[in-house]
Length: 166
Image (cartoon, rainbow, N blue to C red; front, top):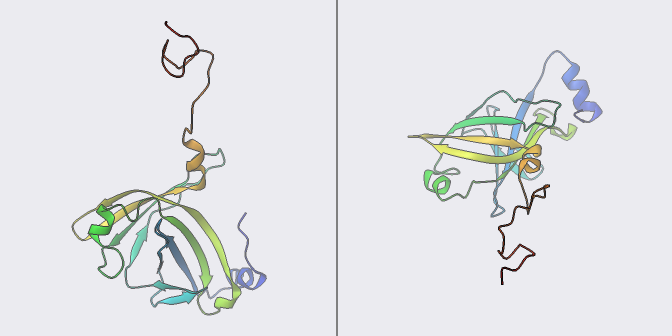
């Protein structure tokens, strides 16, 4: 269930909506970038969300069976914020992404967090890029450390094996 302030919920229940989606991207080098689908830049909670880059997100696939939520976004390369050399250098790999919904006519109403995740595969094209957004469940899909099973996964006599061949 998504949470939002009473004022934002009342606005969403109304007929005339003034809403925008904000994408806050925090790279691993701690640089923060903001993007919006609004027709003008929006400054919210100390971050300026740029309307100039223009992006086209896919539909968000969500399920109730703990599967990984996936979303893909395509956008134009913008020399001011997203460059092909930065993408190829991996600066945007595994950046944290928060997607929020706000009432741009009344930013004091707060936001509704729509999705949180990390950038996965980033592909560059001639003048654009596409990035996969992986949901919070992605971390649970990764194997960390050794796995234990009925059969031992060590090789007889190796450093992890309890038997010495000597």
